Length: 194
Image (cartoon, rainbow, N blue to C red):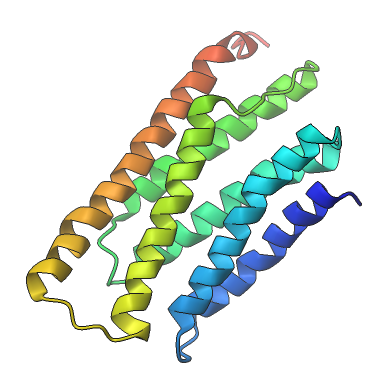
């Protein structure tokens, strides 16, 4: 197994550990979850670059890399919906999940006709922003819970009620835009008569 595939597999392996540390009530559990999620995000940034640069692109990587990204992000957002401390409803999670299912379906259709659906600039921007937003939210949870920093109520309210929802909705908007770009680019593959 080549290095990019090992990095992708490492990201998959890190997902249950991320979830474990988001839930388990031990000292500094959010900080540990933050480290795990950040490590997983770094593998996402590295595996594709290394594979393309060194001509190590494999079918295994083409299959597992986008799947690992989707599961990592959806896992984090699902935990956020469940946490009362994160001001996020289920709607962004549903929209983001629907987009991921749609793009996966398009990739399957494209693969059947011998076409590879490469990540475009909007998809890369969506992924990067979403990962950074999730890292920022977990960092905030860690500051407030693990380190028990007592910020002024006005500051806490601004972060909880404005900054976090704005980050989530920007990620959602980028997700919708990138999904629309994919759909427009590969619409010709969707034939209702076939």
